[in-house]
Image 1: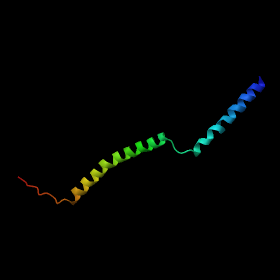
Image 2 (image 1 turned 90 degrees about the horizontal axis):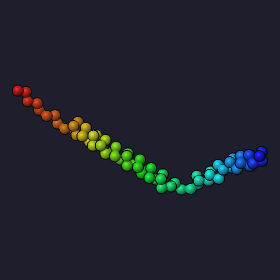
Image 3 (image 1 turned 90 degrees about the vertical axis):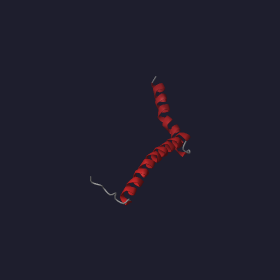
Image 4 (image 1 turned 120 degrees about the vertical axis):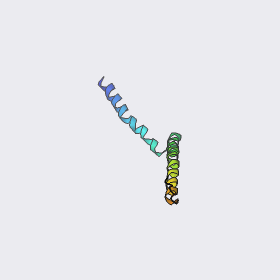
Length: 70
């Protein structure tokens, strides 16, 4: 029984060594999809921000309107 437990522990201790070689591979499709999704969100946030800045600059540069008092 003791040798069986020792064998199981030895086998489980070496398992992470077999899984450690995945870092040398190129990134998978899921990582690229995640980065692409993040880029879409970033661009989606930048478009309204750019429109807001352009509108603010137009308001600053525009000549003041005359106010008519009745």
